[in-house]
Figure 1 (tube, one colour):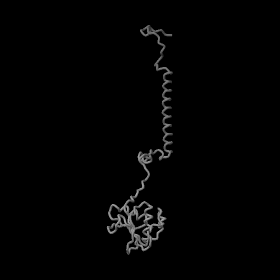
Figure 2: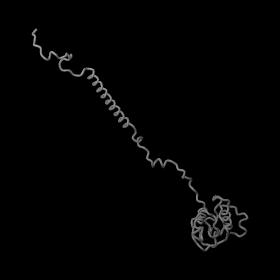
Figure 3: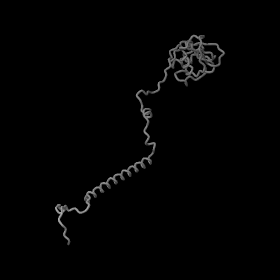
Figure 4: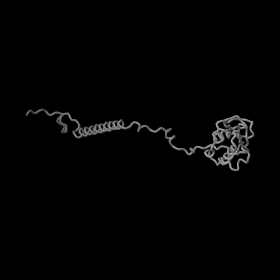
Length: 201
């Protein structure tokens, strides 16, 4: 074996390294494991996202629509809601009943019926007329509502304003209602015993 002269490289301490060296194997292996773990997590996220999208698309779209505030407010009952009120007719107006039908006792029969219904009948009498349809007259605009209510109660179709008659509200009876059965209209009407007073009204 050839011998070479000693030089400065002979004084270096041995390091045990041979050739070009890189980082040891365990470090490179750990990096690979970390990369695999990251990729696995990313794959799981993609899978879960896809499943969520499929589940939402398969559900009923109407179930995902939130109920509007307006619909909720309308559905909730409020304390201010009350039962419908029924208008009470003021029956204190002075009612005059006139018999123009020629049927004896018609005015007295209607007076008794109206009084039993709460009307303030002040007088009855006879009246000569050519009318064939009964009429309810009122002397002033303030009695129009009462006249209309009385006409509706008796089935009289005509209501007119007139100063010709003595009462605030005047019922003119003609042949169209003179023989009506007032019991079917309510009240205690229909019985004329002791009511005619021999007047023939």
